[in-house]
Length: 621
Ligand SMILES: Nc1ncnc2c1ncn2[C@@H]1O[C@H](COP(=O)(O)OP(=O)(O)OP(=O)(O)O)[C@@H](O)[C@H]1O
Image 1 (cartoon, protein in one colour):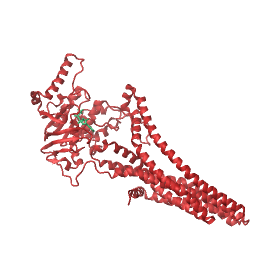
Image 2 (cartoon, protein in one colour):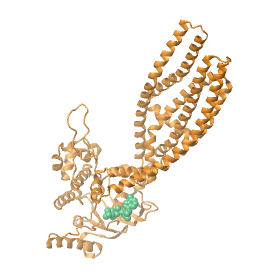
Image 3 (cartoon, helix red, strand yellow):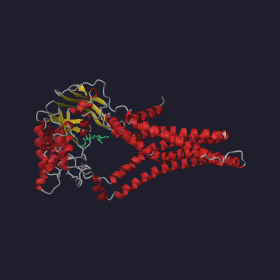
Image 4 (spheres, protein in one colour):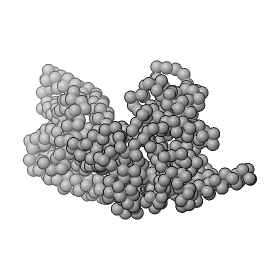
């Protein structure tokens, strides 16, 4: 089976699974609608012939009239019913297709795919066409059958009047079909080609109304500039679409004129025949209906086939996502990690984000022994957060290995590994959801367990803040969405709230705490947004939380890591020095220098209370 045939079969299968009854109803209704026009044309011819022959029997005429009236009712109602069935079926297929698409993206257990622009283009096309294609293929398949039946009925009618005329009308349609299929391929290629441009346009459109961007846009006065960029991308996409439309218009003008000339010539011939008495008057009516019917059927067929053709080409993006290889190899029989007993080792780890990027880690070797608190410090870009991502197996090292109690992380199931880790990432998420959900997402088993959620919030020092929100833990932490309102319930919609940076950080910390006693706790800058008092409080809490447990702490504030069991200083993706706080100070290296700088900053602050201190390794963040 060719790839396209497979795509059609997949699309039809999706439609069938999404709603068998609806698909059958659609098929029955389509068949009924197919025979209506031919029935009407023949009844009209027979009535006219009866009248023209001067023998209008009341019974026959009334009978034909009744059939015509019935057909009229069905013609009036049919399209609406077909439309409803098609839409209902489309909704169900759309839901199933969307679910399947996003389930497929969950197979990408790492991050690399999400950093690939081509993948985002493909996902967008898949989202646009994955849900629509199965419904359209069914609709087009039935539409093709319906149109073919109607067309065949009229063609037979036309053959009874003139086989030559039938051949001419049909012949005029063949180039049209070939041309439309060619145009369809060009259109699909054009849509894929402008994908990146349209994605940028979307990006700027979203940015212009993004609540987080609004401050800077207004302060820097960049709104008009960004709007200009958005419009430029839209113009570029429009230009491509216009070019395609013009090409289609030109081709369709030629094929349409050919068909119209064939029909016009035929009409002239049948009129002359009726006038000189070689043809019946009813033939004129039947001819007009048949030519119109055959041509409508042919152009309908062309539209349906082209729709299927184009949709199947675009559906390829949906299938490509569905069948894409996992980004990280997960062994068929992964090794079980088990609870951490000895520790985690990074052995000569080399890593870069892609072959086009510089090395982020260059032969990094370090150990996080079980039951100890290890701190990672270093300048911006030294590779600290990269280590965190590799420990969670968001990527695999290009060379070297990371061992969990001696087991290479490449041999384990990432889901099992991650279930053993609690983490607060540097770029933690702020979900536009309720406070309870924002914390509960740390452990889905506790999502509805208010007791556990509150305990985690208390530990992160955010319980008081959340309790005082308008709806406590059920308050939306968003100014973009209000709460979802039960349609049966009257009353104002919920007002979302906006937390401060430090409060959000505590919520992220609560999310990590909710995971409870995991084997490894990773905290990447857990207190960067907190005030001095809150930071002290949080670090006190963290010290208790990590006592006797394995943890990795990253911070630019050296005061926060000084009591770690072991401090590793990274520089340029390598270990520059390591030891305890006292050992590193005695060594007089990078750490000692940076610590002195920060301490100096605090001393200056004491001396000149208004001075801006260097309280971080770098002021760039
Ligand atoms: N997703 C990514 N794609 C490409 N390069 C990246 C990506 N993330 C980080 N890098 C690069 O990898 C290097 C190490 O970055 P990393 O975030 O690990 O540094 P860091 O020590 O955590 O820095 P900071 O103190 O600023 O948080 C940097 O040069 C950075 O530009």
